[in-house]
Length: 539
Figure 1: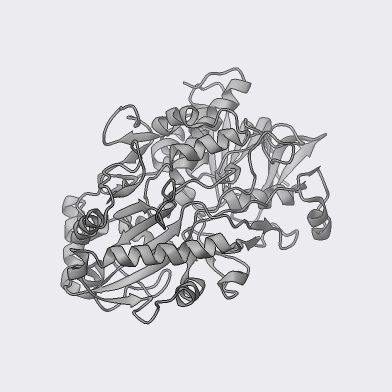
Figure 2: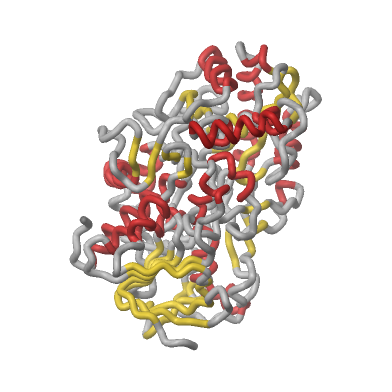
């Protein structure tokens, strides 16, 4: 093993939270920071072109390309689980939809024992992370590392969709991160001047110019090193396969995400005692909830053929329209290549009488047969429907003690009757909205589920056959004040010292909407928590 590297802080993972955290920890110049990223640099051009998501979603060069174990309630299908393996993490391959969730999400965090994580506590960190097109307001921030913008042009389908929603009884909502989430409108996107914006670009890239910051790519961390119950470093393997060790003089912070962070904890001896014994891993601290409490947003797609060639399917079908797409992007940073996958959407109640919205939908101006596949050869669009707060809980476990082995991901989707009934109700509601003017005049026919899928059983069978995750796993290192929680409200791992977690795995309950914005907030807040403990206020 080569000579160790000594740094004040080691950040494992250069994703949405890790990139911001490394930047903030190094701002004062008082501390040295080492960032270890298993993937490579974000040089693939498709990362930076919004519509390029389809080119990276299954690309092993930038993606862990995990699969779940068979899901019993989804007819034992194994679901594809995209996870960023590149500088930028999932923020480099996601759909760029920027949604914080509802204030009540964070009030519930606080009420469950996460002191300091209520809405008024986290709002300043949401604001600090963003460079918002509305500027510095009561609810938005200016000058942060991640740009938040409105679409630079959008599909005409969005206008029809929003108008139909309003006619259906939904409120027009021009800011899903504003005073209220419910309604229908255009999504905010993490895009700056037509290109993807994320924390690796806006925070880590400038931080790398500081002499106290080092970023190692191709660095697969295999275990945390402990000395008398204190995290003192990590062992990792370089891209060439060379084993190396880095030493943390102050703390190790895990930002590897809701799948890889619990995997790394368990490989290091922190986790359920019986499981670690079965895997042949020596115990450092028995934490029974490591890898448990897995939550995710499952979604099912409704695909409709259109009467006119107004979809991205049509833009990609001919050489002339593809050339026009390229020209518009090169010259104006607009057109379909500048489209995020989901342009418009809605937050709604799956059935009447609910106290708050429990469902989200995404309008995508294209359709595909499956993940990562080419669009259909006919004119069509997709509406993806997801549940805001699933009650089902899954887990992440080790497959064996080999750090190179993928973890066993058991999402347990649709394990509860409430979750199953939700999808029946929500699919019915969205179909009804799509039959409302002016969408009714746009749609030629419903392609999937199709007109034969009418009764509750058939709808649920369609969901079980076709639903997929939209890649929002969280909760596997639950934060809380109770002794069973994996981390406390300061994100310190219980049972050991000098080790924290700062990523989606700490979320006690999934938020209503896409979770990347919350990961950015976690990175910002974690920096202040860590710096406060080391007597250095955030700049």
